[in-house]
Length: 438
Image: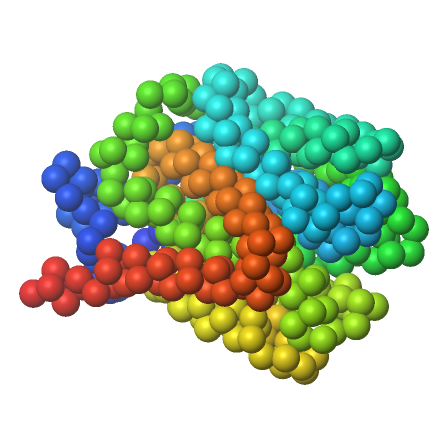
């Protein structure tokens, strides 16, 4: 990993920055991060200059604590992916119905991302993050003890509250924790918790579920959440609110900032396509690729390792072009994994899938910071809201496709949405570059 920042965080001087990102501006749209506007700064929501009165290692320790929190939350949100079949069998529901364990928290997280950001008001962000992690711990312990599917689903709703609120606030914290030149790397590290959850969290949870039962997996995530809570309490400095976001500001940001609007649309298309397929990756690998059940956790581990590599590769590159490459690659991969049989082919496609999707979280966050550097929390909350609504929409659509058509219908639907995302990025952010320069 080089010292290059995540897209939009540390812009190069005009002579080195390359062509402006066209198609993302309009009347009244000039501003930081957009052609014709001033260079981005930390913005009103960024707080005091990072590093003041603290050793550099303290800032990076705090970043690691936030990344661990993200890891725990995403592991918790995605844990049912590797356990759909055993949970459904134990509680007497179909795979499609069991997929609601991913759909429900996604919907709640989408609602809570902006609501928690607004509701937090002037509360210290350190306190807010700690409370949200504590809610996640309680939810996972409740799921581990649940007598039926309804109780599990209720616990999953609390997970959604934690994910939406924590992610929206934590996404823009790097600028408050480390020096400006290190913000790109710190942001990539924070979002490294997302693919690492796939590397360690979901496969480890799947393995625990196979060895000790699915309840053990939920309990283990709850215990890990306690570790994350302790780390946040010990390592995160006080983070007083520096700007009180009001609810009307969020739709106003969407109306007035075209770059934010396009970023939200691309987020919806990519993430819906991803989770239409990934929620049902286990039945896809077993029924289409012919992979034995005992190898699923190992393959998910490989998927996650590839995802971590994709995250840090994307963190040093332009967000717009990265998302074009990611969505185009996933269009091909999801279409092929739906129709090509064979464990070897399925394994190769799964690794390519992980590498490509690993760049999504840090790239969409970079897109939003670049689009609205003066309001990073507000822009992040909109992106996180759509990200999680898209998780819910993808899981729901995938479940309907699996139950109503067939297992391959889920990745094929995902491929169609990825193609729409690639077309959107191309038309709005790539194709018009020569015209703008001319």
